[in-house]
Image 1 (cartoon, helix red, strand yellow):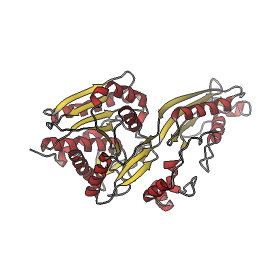
Image 2: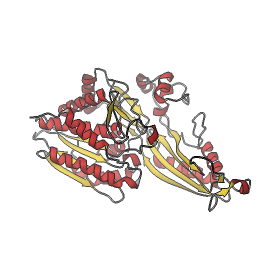
Image 3: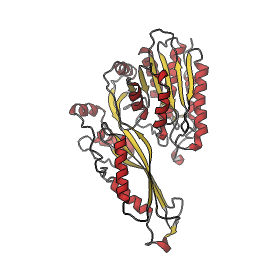
Image 4: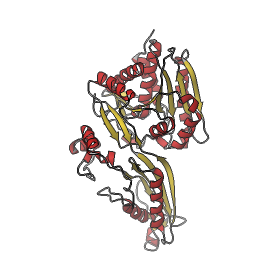
Length: 455
């Protein structure tokens, strides 16, 4: 039987990258639909002799969830769940890209394009690792692909509802693989056992019906840009990163010395962090364990800010409106609902007795922190294969990021969750020039094929 070729892997990866599957804007709904239909059609064509199920799960106001089951002939087959997301972040700012964001470009031994690292590259690797096993007759396990289109927009509520509707199909899964993270460094694989949760907000304030001439009405009108700046300054100290909301740190997990020492294996120095991030300085909110600040402490960050005239040139106005988007990352024992309440109370108290200001605080997304025990058979076997392929022991690590699906799968199905992936720290996810290292890409294909065959 024919094994998969690199040419057909790249053909699929190329076509998948070309879809503008941006889930954060309704303007791209057709592109998202076309993208998931492309993947579905590929499964129907290439896996037709082993395909037990291939369906789109639809829920009003949410992007389709693709569920695909590949059946093994073995009576002893386990069922492995494989998660990914076909949606991507916007390509802005386009002017900072060196290549077309929606064209796969192999340059400097890297694959460039929006979604290459997050998460279309990993979707490609997962599909072709299973296809390789099917074609070679080595697929001793069943495989269920769960591919969603809402991950980047934070609509985890829709994902959970659709997963609940598929509980009968997914109840047989013995472990879920989420390849939506990366390597510690070249040939240094990681398995993540914890993720931070997240709560996202948008605040808009308004002081009048229209923008005003700053010369005619200066000193007479409230300026929403100044007001929202003051609000932000009270949310957290811009120089220490300490959050100023009363009770924000109350429920934070106290980490043992043993876990801190284990995590130090994956620590980067201040100089390494400066090089990796392009920052001019690193804030030392956690002086004892600088690199762990984004892993073991919660945070609050402004993600977007607008008011007045922001185009080229100058326009002397006092704006009528201002807005800010911000998010909180949470660690174990913090509850998203409780933090949401703290933000709501803080906002209500801030605007209390302030005349002439209308405000609206909206919740945009919410997900709980995730934690799993690494001492289970699936993770141990996975780590063994990763060491074999990459030549280095697996680093067990925490991520400061959030993958809502991990906590949802764990809570709904109570099965082992394996979080791993093959991108490098310079993959620029969510930024211009997103990329997937070519060597790690092909080794990732080899690793997943071995893992899925040997579980």
